[in-house]
Image (cartoon, rainbow, N blue to C red; front, side, top):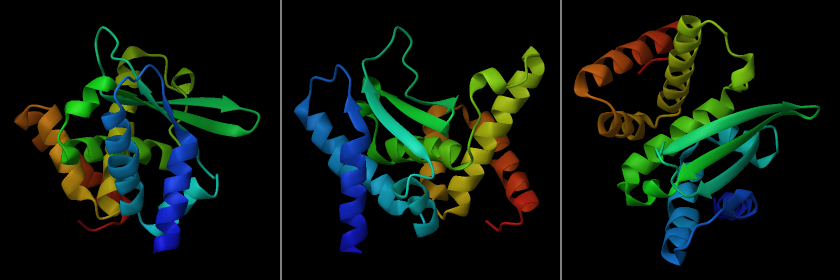
Length: 183
């Protein structure tokens, strides 16, 4: 297990970029604890997708835009396949650890599921919204299937009104049934 932890630490060190971040405390907290903890929580077959380069991921800590978004994964297609950039706003430094981990794991769910770039999403506004909702549900369902449901529930509860959380949890449960997974 020490070897995997060392591999995860090296991976995070190579993939993490602190664009405009001022606080060293946040760097230590994020890199050595929260992000590494999230990767260490993944099942080995999912972790290996990242460590062996099957999923090309960069992680950037970015200054808060006018309307901070917490975390967001951006996909780009190139001749080498899909590349993902997970942007984490400064505001995330103030989140409780479990909230942060839930959000981060959900974003890793997008990468593991190979979310396509936004320019490949449906053009119709309604279809686009349904696609985005389905993609979020799929990422959540993956986190649940990894045995990390508790982090996702904390993230959802901290982010959405309770009636939305109930709807999202119901949708995740239905997707897991379709995927053949048990809760």
